[in-house]
Length: 465
Image (cartoon, rainbow, N blue to C red; front, side):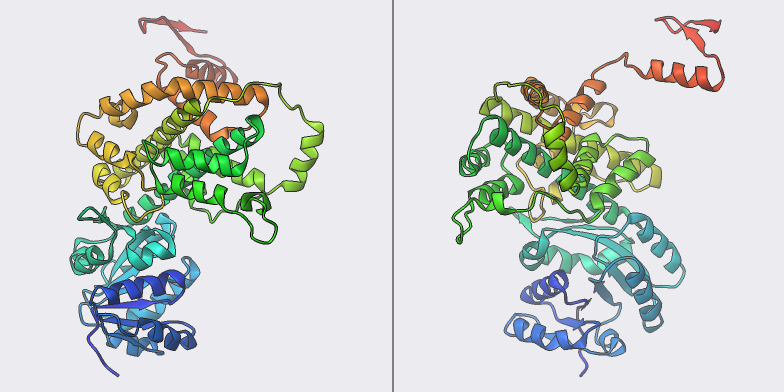
């Protein structure tokens, strides 16, 4: 069976099938295939009746032949070795101008290497970050597209049609060449880690210090979701905390194992930030907290033998709300700073304002703050740091004392708030002209070269010691 499909989708797992249905619902003809051919017929049954023509092909060669040239093929398969093996297999079947899109969560370094590998072959390689989970993929994701201008010109009409819309603006953009799309998605996920960790820390304060029930804490998050903290994650936090297990009638959150998993993208953010000489301390704290959570038995032992802190009044709800706002601003500021530095290092010319805009709908970290961040990047941005943009600085100034009180109170009580504390420490370090790095450098010089140059406050040198 032959057709002239607008796009091919290979990989009919949760995300691949959702995206294929999204293309079809928006009127595009779609060819689909899968490594396990017996997945194809059930998918075609699901796609029956949608606006676009959808056909399945068990053989890769038939699948490729069914797509109109120049071809755009979206692969939703595991990154790493499976993607490399697929490139080896599919490239001989392709023609000049065809595009391979890797829509999985891939290490941007690998994406850059695959792009370099295909340079000169006539086949284009695109790394595309997709956010929003299965629901977003089906009804409107946020997408961060890397790769060549040629590939974007081919894919853009389809991408904009299936993307989430903020008002009428499609939440998709060609953010830059080679690995830029996967890098931006990695940082997106790192910010997501930090946001989730801060929500969990505030939940812990309310549970352990204020002795509030999950449903009451959930109601608090629901109220916050109506204001400056409106976001998908705030909304979901309220739903999780108010959910009840039907069998036991206990709060669902109390029945979930106290160990959080991770897929690696948060860790990638921290690794790349360090490589670039930047701090993503709030994200690093969130990654670390997930690591600590896996040591459940060790923590149970620690609960018996380690110091508990001292009885301390719980922070007020107003302070918690402002602290969450300050923490969210800072974690985003760190993420955008990492992207700014990467853009300079790799020659990507990332548009931070546009990145903030495409995160306003469809993605996991969508929030009311993103409009403010986008506006800030289009105006004065001293030293390329978002926290110095006048409007953001004013919002942060109004909330930072609450963050201080929350961190201080939690620390005295022995209540862990690693991400909130890291955010505060970064803020205070950025606000201190004379820090402690001179002492660190002095120690390095003494133990390294056994000497350093003495300078006074004016910067005048006074010889070596």
